[in-house]
Length: 87
Image 1: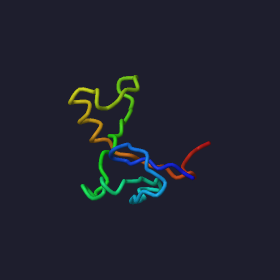
Image 2: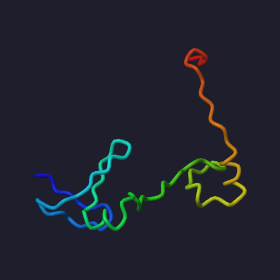
Image 3: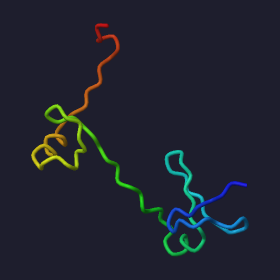
Image 4: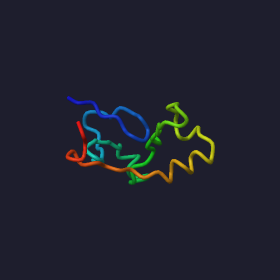
C-alpha cells in the first residue's frame, strides 16, 4: 500500500485514516483530516528560484541589484518560427 504524507504537518498517515486529495498541475498533494478542517486551502509552496544571465554570469534573479531586476522584468520573450531559422 502506498504511504501518504500530509502536505501541511508532514505526518505519515495511517492505513485507515481519512485524508483529502488535491491535484495541482498533475501533481497529487494530500492533507490529513485535521489539517484540512483547520484550513482547506492548499498552501506552503516553495517559492521558485529563477536564474538568468546578467553581465556574463548565470545567477539567481533575487540576488541581482534593484536596477538589474527591473531590467529583467522589462524583458520580452520572442519565439521564432522554424521556417525563419537559417539552419
